Image 1 (tube, rainbow, N blue to C red):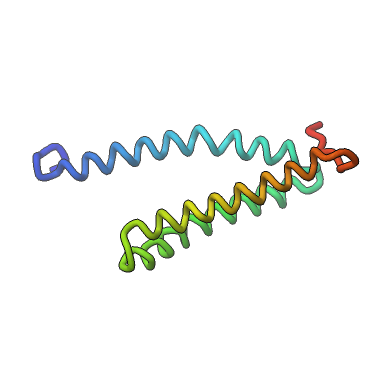
Image 2: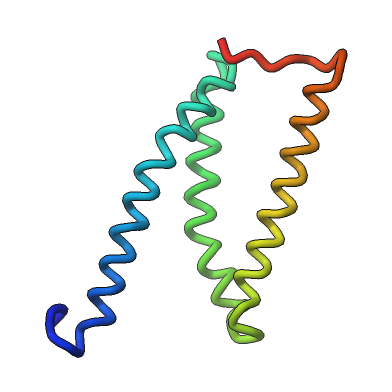
Amino acid sequence: MVLQPDGLPWLWLLLVLAWVSVGTSLTRPPLFGLLSNLTPAHEQGAALGVAQGAGSLARIFGPVFATALLPYSPPLPYLVCAAMLLATTVVVLRHLCRQNQPGAKSLSLS
């Protein structure tokens, strides 16, 4: 079935999914570790819960959102997601630059 010539698309799908799972397993633990280091001890459970919840909602609504945009133009979901990523990057950079200004409240990792 999968190893037959007509099953080649399935084989490619399984290989890509394997790479996605490897990428996820390499990025999520450091990100959650960083989040726990940057969060005060009494708020870590709430912060990690919100991060997990946001990730779950993104995995639910992301494909629905992209599928709704796909009939208008095939590249549109990718362009919208790239714009959202760019906007998020700008917000984070502005926040980080504001923290590095003299007299700004410093964020401690300890």
